[in-house]
Length: 357
Image 1 (cartoon, helix red, strand yellow):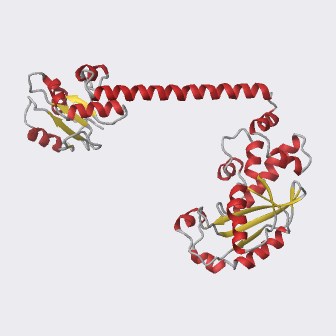
Image 2 (cartoon, helix red, strand yellow; image 1 turned 60 degrees about the vertical axis):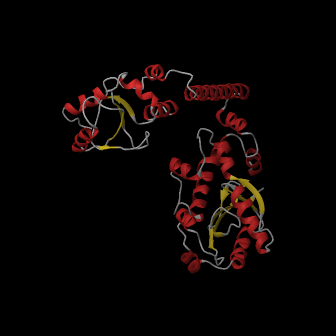
Image 3 (cartoon, helix red, strand yellow; image 1 turned 120 degrees about the vertical axis):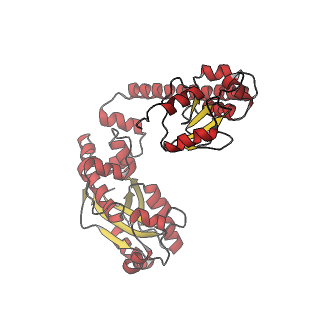
């Protein structure tokens, strides 16, 4: 391969049939670009969805004003490509999902040959980066770009990436022809990483396999832990465990809690020995809080207050719904934001100076 063309498209979306509404291209010979880049807007007479406009900025009105018919556009594109191999960043999209289906739909003979993917090339040439999306590489290398997410701007960025970063690195590693580069894009990434970074392949493969084994073991341990947790919750729900003991074992009732009132929601369960709920509600409201009247702990509850004016204290509340419901919510989701506090701690907070949040 000597002469080839870098191509990029912007479209009306990602769902077939996909219409190209902007096509840009840049000619290359070997490792060098030549001539001016090409760009054309294509008017298929369709509405451009807002979701697509949000990506590239092109509206239906813009394409109607600046676009030309598909037949005329592809005549110009064909003249520019001249049957050369076509490369693209994500060739699987630009060629497989956009250009080839569109040419078939329009009855146009393919304007070039399927070339190579510059994203795959970047992934193998720049193994030190975790991603090779164009936006990321543009930021990392300060790539040229007249406007991101336009076909022309992306062509400028990919051309700059190849000419200034990728090709020099591969040439420095001994590649002398573009055919070698194309073959390089087809090799397994680990082979390419070792080649680029001068690593021993067998040692690196052993290291990668060891990492994968640790990851598999970690995933298995997490799954086993989750299954055990589900079995435990099922046992709790079926009454196989003493809820009072479990509540203490899991520290679900806070000791010496810090209680805020402003913009916080309080839910009460059980009768309080301190006073009535209307009294508590007035004091909470005066401090900028609110009282929830729900039957169970809902998402907006910050504190569940356990009333203790009963023979067995708060433990008698386990026969009701709110505390058992709250316990199970905490058990199923330890990160749940609501807190369970005793009446004495709630009253202490009421009598204390207001806290800064």
